[in-house]
Image (cartoon, rainbow over all chains, first blue to last red; front, side, top):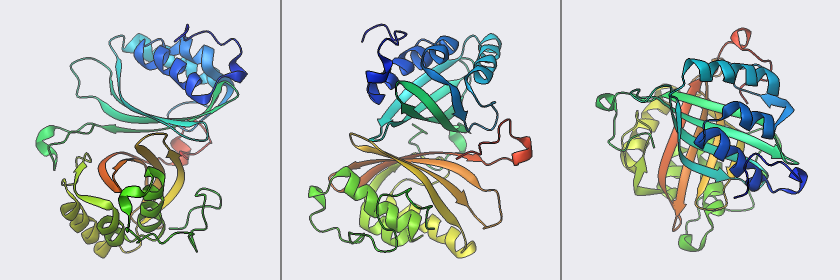
Length: 138
Length: 153
C-alpha cells in the first residue's frame, strides 16, 4: 500500500482503497485525528449518539479521547466490503490493555474518496463466566 | 417487519425467489442465502422457518446471551416471541460483502412503542448455510440526550 495519508487523486480511488487507507491509519496506527483529517468529509454525517456531527466536532472529541486513553487499542477482527461503498469494521476496543473492553461495529459510507457517513454499535464484553456459550464475542 | 422502501433490493411482499427453497443450496451464492434468510427472519418475523431452512445445525454463536447451535438458539427465540408477539426487526441497511460475510444493521424492538436497540448481525455463509453469527447491540437513547440530531440509523 502507498502512504495511507496520501489523498492524491482521491476521487478515482475505489471505496475499498479509501477504506483500507483509513483503516491502516485509524485502527492500526492509532492516529485517529490524522486519519480523520485525511479521509473524512468535512460534512460527515455522524450517527453515534455520543458524538457531534461533522468532521471537526468529531476530531475535537477524538483528540480528547486520545489524551485520556493513550494506551487504547483497536484490534480488528473482520472487515466487510459492501458492493455499494459501505463497509463494516468489527473490532475489539480497549481503553487500556488490562480491560475486557468493548465489541464494536463501525459502518462507513464512502463516496468520491471520502468517508461521508458513520454509524456504530458498541457493546461491553461480558465476564466469560456469565456467557451462554464458550465462543467469545469475536 | 417490512423495511422502508429501497432498503432491500427486492419486493418484500412478493420476493422473486422462494425463501424456503433450499434445493441445490450448495450452488447458491452467499448473497442468495442471505436474501432468503433476511426475508424469513427479519421481514416475515418467522425465526422457525428462517433457522430450519438456513442455519447450519452446528452454527457457531458469538452472542454471549444465546446458546450455541441452531436448535438451542431457535428455542430461545421462540420463547421470546411467545412472550412478546409484537417484537420486530426493521432492517435499515445490509452490507453485501464481497466474500463470505454479510452485515445487517437493524432496529430491534421488543414492543412497538419502546425505543429499542440498534443491532448489527454479521453472518458467515458457506456451502448454502449460515455457519457463524456475531452481533453487537446498543440501546437507542432518548433523542434529547443525543449529541446530534441524525438518529442512530
